[in-house]
Length: 128
Image: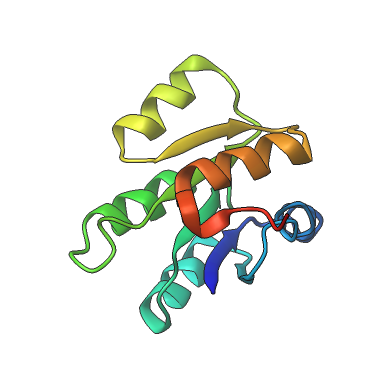
């Protein structure tokens, strides 16, 4: 079973990401609506990857990413940033902060599925 933490302050966006990723077999999802809630969830459970929004009202995505990269137990957690900030400067900033990948909103279901499969490798193969 692959466990993915989906973090976005928009319930609609969290639901959309999860709906897209349900195409990946044997995957379960936990969601968080804020950066603080994401950090709490990360301290209580183990995940195979995190999908993280940049713009959140309490603790932003970059700060959550920096927290993750600063923890020995979380340092290798793949983190995909999904954001409305599609500019090159934002992309560079999050990749330098340690993001595994960057996907600008709006995205297609195929794009996010392909990105997650690339990150997870063999754990996210489709059912034939």
